[in-house]
Length: 475
Ligand code: NAD
Image (cartoon, rainbow, N blue to C red):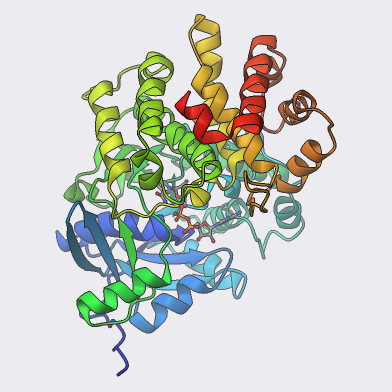
């Protein structure tokens, strides 16, 4: 017997937000908070979800009129909620003009983004716009039919300026420090290449709030869709599973102050997000990446399986205590020790199948903000960073592309080919480490030229090659 498809009930909210990058996290986070706000009466903040890449989100959501199921996996308890904040879905490569005309619509007040780190087209080590990035070069040559998020934003802002319409707020929700400042820098650098007066207008009138976002959200699998069918009796390929915890800290900086009442879902609006973001990037994302590389190498499929091994749980506790917390200024209202204790409990939630392979993705874009800044601060303060050096060595071992059984690792990273060539082109472990550390896209030269850092990463890398990740972590 075929299972019926989820169908929307009730009307669609008017579109006030265009969201770029409607992946799993957007559905588990932005769409849920916005649904909370709409339920409280904010009717004009419906979301137009725009994929800049594949048609998957549209194929999944259109037959359901934008509705989808958010599945909260608590310890021993699962909750299902249908989310109705998405009013439509577009696929940019199919019709860039439709996307631009919606972004230029005066009713749209916010453009939010979850496009992954690489979607900003910046150099991770320096934060500069990559003018030679193929999408950026394309968009500068074809501003009216862009491919990149930055190209879409600038063209839509140019159209609003020409029509004397106020700009929208650009609100990035990716795991990047000062993500609003980064997005602003990329938009202005791109706009300057087009027309300096456009860049000046954006700088003066547009707002780029930084945000800290937190809710662990694994990629949805066919098994997740099946288990929803079993539990609820309908088919919903757009469903998303996530943990109960959620935290959203937003810089209260919106064009004309116009935004939904995301407080309805518990969002915190603050003057400065940076301290919260640093805490989250270093404590959560730093250990997530550490567990992803070393856990994958040790043969664990998920984060929960990795920290079920006591040596890995101990590794987390030790990194937090000795190597991360000392580098993090305490954000107002937070207790760093309690925050990290709670993190370990979140990692241990066995219902959340967050794959080490998924978190390991795009390491070249993630390492600077998750691990390298913490290491640099420890070096400057003369503090310990052995475990963080091991995490970097784990990444180098991982991007070599061969696991501890000699099987191929499917390395997903914009620099995957370059990394593999660097590693394969060197003969000794020390030379392999050196070849990777000399990549300026990832490593600031002041760090990669530090002899103590090089020595520690090399020693850890040799240990991983000789003894394997589990034995190294145990020791
Ligand atoms: P996902 O793979 O489900 O979705 C990624 C989205 O980004 C897709 O819509 C994809 O088309 C788009 N994208 C990828 N590369 C792009 C590019 N170069 N330009 C434009 N768009 C691009 O991943 P996700 O779980 O939704 O995570 C997305 C981002 O959300 C992460 O990179 C992270 O910054 C943030 N985030 C995720 C989590 C989580 O637990 N999954 C938690 C906090 C923050």
